[in-house]
Length: 293
Ligand SMILES: NC(=O)c1ccc[n+]([C@@H]2O[C@H](COP(=O)([O-])OP(=O)(O)OC[C@H]3O[C@@H](n4cnc5c(N)ncnc54)[C@H](OP(=O)(O)O)[C@@H]3O)[C@@H](O)[C@H]2O)c1
Image 1 (tube, rainbow, N blue to C red):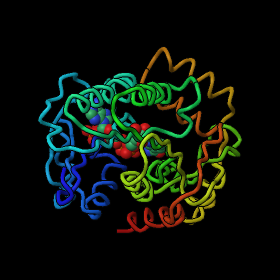
Image 2: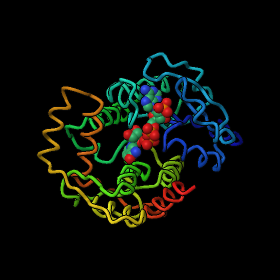
Image 3: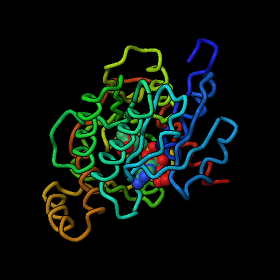
Image 4: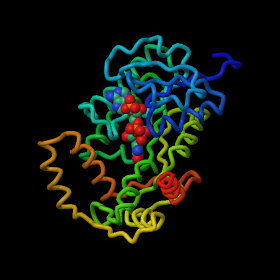
């Protein structure tokens, strides 16, 4: 890359909440965006077409990602991971294995740097499959030949839509006593902080949350207040969570995975240093306006 050429960034996870926030930020900063999508997901990027230089289709859970995918690419930013997908794959196959395939292909393809969007708390060994998979990938990335940066966000605003939907129905269900804290962040604030890393020294881990910490009770109360509902907040005891997890483990791997993560974040503090300006109340108000239209 010479000084006149824009830096070419490959975004993996381009169709997700974070990827869709990141693409315009990179474009506005003069970067060339290569969006990596899996077959069948391309149409989700149509509204962002004007921000994207090239779209490449690849199955990252397969080991042989074509070298041409990385032609001219300086940095890969990956937020690939299972959140709500129900395609029968495990966190080990996607969050770990898929990202590892991508990393190894990027090494072969001459990429210089790999930025990975992990999750807050990935430094701790916990019995939560998605966190275990991300922790394993973080280790592989740190041991790779590429320059690396790791972003460990607290919960995204977009994940608070579950609380919003419960608030609209008048009852919000929470595991534990609702006193555990989280620092919800808008994906756009996260995207801007991630794009800032392109100008930062490699080898850094950025733990990052939104502008304020909330308990889960406070999030529920805020959602109910914006929804104009006098809600019931129902607390499910930890023993019931543990019993449900023990049963689900043998019945449905994907439900177990989702529930173990949700139970973990609702019963443990998952705050991260505060950052950004977009606030959760405004996010809930935007949800409400979208309901009205
Ligand atoms: N949401 C949160 O609160 C939160 C908090 C902390 C960390 N994180 C982590 O941040 C990352 C991004 O979150 P997000 O909310 O943007 O997630 P998301 O909206 O579910 O996006 C996930 C992305 O990964 C891709 N993906 C999933 N399975 C795949 C597979 N088998 N092969 C190829 N691509 C696959 C999806 O592609 P398709 O569109 O094709 O499915 C999508 O582009 C995730 O790894 C998540 O664990 C999220």
